[in-house]
Length: 180
Ligand SMILES: [Fe+2]
Image (cartoon, rainbow, N blue to C red; front, side, top):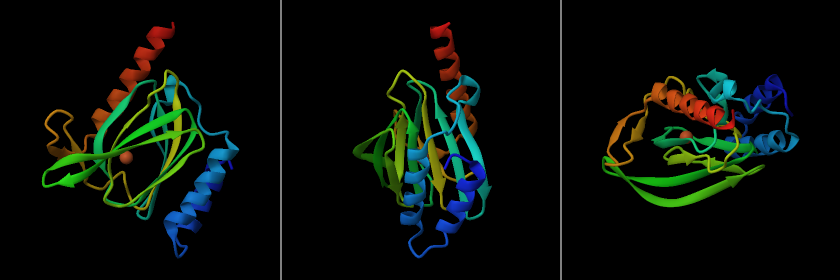
């Protein structure tokens, strides 16, 4: 399955199953195994929205080498499938307005990770090449209000989608400079 319309259709069916997250896991496993996703280029770096609706959001996240996203929440279930490269997920749990570390999940090519609706994680591409991952969310991730946490103080603040996009572009530009 390397066709966007086919992926959207399969995910739309899956979210109406009795166990939506498990059904999404199966869809993602098929999708990342089949390959053919994304174009690992600087021009595609970022959180590319493949689908956005009230019940379902699908992103094709193209991570430049060594880029990171601050700890953040989603306030809905989520699933990640790696089709190329690697993602290191630092997991946290909420403690008042701050967070405490609760473990690390290192995802590699073809891994699928399911996240509950109270998950908080920071994500890093640990490799010197691009990572590609399909991220599926059980709601309208693009328009919901949610949080991120300052990496130094670990204090909660509004999620900064513009800042995240900028950090992806800056990391892609650094990598392009290094390889020129
Ligand atoms: Fe996330």
